[in-house]
Length: 355
Image: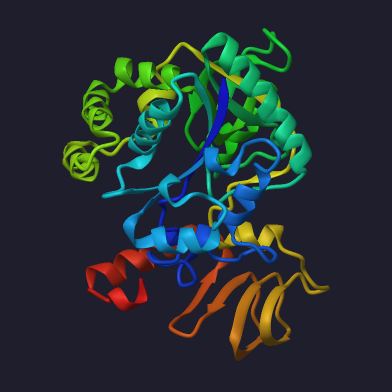
């Protein structure tokens, strides 16, 4: 058994406009600290997985920046999808490529843009999952112990009777709930947050794709036949052009009866929008999180980012203000989810220079 990682890094992060754009999305910008989110994700795997066993799945537009930010990863390990087809295709493509290197591989699949603290505990949790995934040939995910009734995350219900060292059978997946349902989940004690981190044997996930997503499996078979030949890129484009966009959660995890989880209580946040960034960021005595050249007066509970321009903010509260060289965003923190609608508007009006 050899351990590999797949970092999913093809998203556009539209809720983080105007800082996040197609050529330089959320995972490729610095939001917390000195590193970008994808750099932190790769760093978390140090000591667990060799650099030449880490694969990044991105797209042609972002591939060059990924290479620049992760020079330790071999260039041939950076896979660029021709079109975004959601996580099932992304994971399937990486899996057939890794299988060609080692058909006995176990892969850790994780998003490039999550925030995780207590990295030592994170690695211990992964090691537990890897051991079980290899010996059981099950699909394993990480469930995060919730500390509040969060409506922005999916949930996983599990059988509280453990079957191995911190391993539990998954009963159901639940989509993002309303507040009342989220409270019920917390009170029940048998629901965890869905981290979107997966651990499995490469043959196991490909077998489950074959069972539940036969069209994708047929396409992956065609791609696999071309690995190591000059026809690979052309074949990937042909296959992707015919695929439906579907997530691995909906396409496989929710349908399989071979899903398990390991419970984790390290700090985890999927950093889904500017409101999440505000909640995580350090704040001053007025409850403001400020980055850049900013003056405030009678301003409270706001996130203000303006590193290139002097920005004065007076007499407001509960706002997100993102001031870049090209655009200014002002929105109520409670409407941070709606920022993606600005991106839709700009695309519809062919304002491509702003997206």
